[in-house]
Length: 390
Image (cartoon, rainbow, N blue to C red):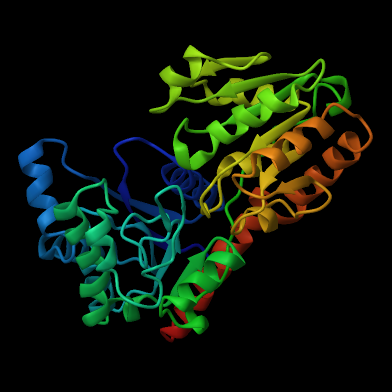
């Protein structure tokens, strides 16, 4: 593909997460391939007054639209790639790109276009009440940060762009999984504009030991209720797998309470550098992913596959498909402590671990490697540009 000028647009998160990592990695990948990437990023205001003022115009921010329009005139991109508009950018930028005739691609990292909190998760379990209906139910539940006023703005940021037909200006949406694609179709997006493009991770290199030679089971993630860490710890307490240790990597609101009374055989490491997490994966017996919500496409799962780590995952949403359910992973009903205890008990045996490791690695090579990601990005841009007659 001839080199392109790509305007990459992203509203950063206050606490850096997976979406920020994906945006950065795709930018580097495109530049390495010879494409020019214009990095257009903003961050939500931090002060209470500025943040409130910005949130009030989150459904449609004319100033953001003008600034993006200025960037288009300055750089004359061949294509724009939006990663996140919430909340300072707002959907108004799509109208600006469309008026300028710029082919536009948008990655759907979360469910923000159909759900006020972006997670399809409420009161401890998946929720699709607003999918295909309207977002105002979120207001009564305080779905965005437990706040009714903030939920009003989050719901308005879904409803107003719909009424203004703003999303029609996006030529191609990129959901991360087939499961997510079906949720967005149910939410009203055209199936013709939804093309699945997964995330990618770098190759971590060869494993240090075979999984069957390790006694370490990993959990890597935020220590919060929706991640299922409490389910995992209860299941570990019940299973008490012999000669194994559960190593918990991550931080979050539950950390202090969980560390106060851990089950036997559990060690908390807190947040760790990326290189250290990679080394832990390359030496692990297995990794547990007990999430209680649908997830987007967690990078930690792809990193585990690349490191050849057998997995125990929640059979929920797009998670099983992400890990090629059946050979690289045990899929367990989300939140079922007895089923999770039984699955953890299986990790004490060696019969399937090494075969699962080899298959996990092959899943990475066939789905989530950098060269496949570059091909997919370039194909997405070709499709968007083709729709605009470029």
